[in-house]
Length: 128
Ligand SMILES: [Zn+2]
Image 1 (cartoon, rainbow, N blue to C red):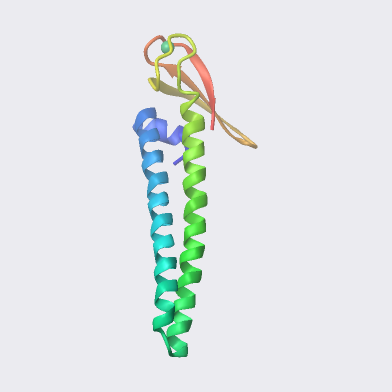
Image 2 (cartoon, rainbow, N blue to C red):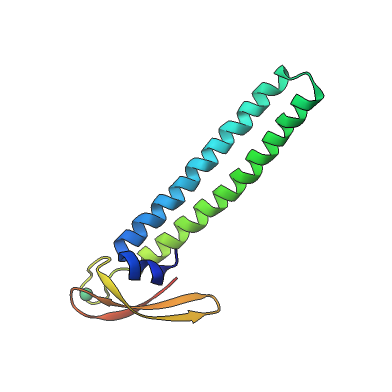
């Protein structure tokens, strides 16, 4: 979910929590794919027919592809969430994550979100 949409719907803290949960769910999927690859390698010696070997190779390829996709998604979601979280401190009163959305400016390299502190009213930008 995009930052501006997330802040608007759920607030910053819930958006951040959801991004972390989503990224770590992808990490779990990566781990399951690694287990699937090792299980397929372990089972390779048990298969004797060509069809079984083909299904085993297909399983390895599928687990590898899904695992690489999930790992990349995990790292991207986590890096984005952390980059935004480092900008969530109010420059004026240092309150963390207590912000509300003011305006969104769409740029070529991502959104620039203007926010306002709920505690002191100071405004600043967060680049997503
Ligand atoms: Zn503030």
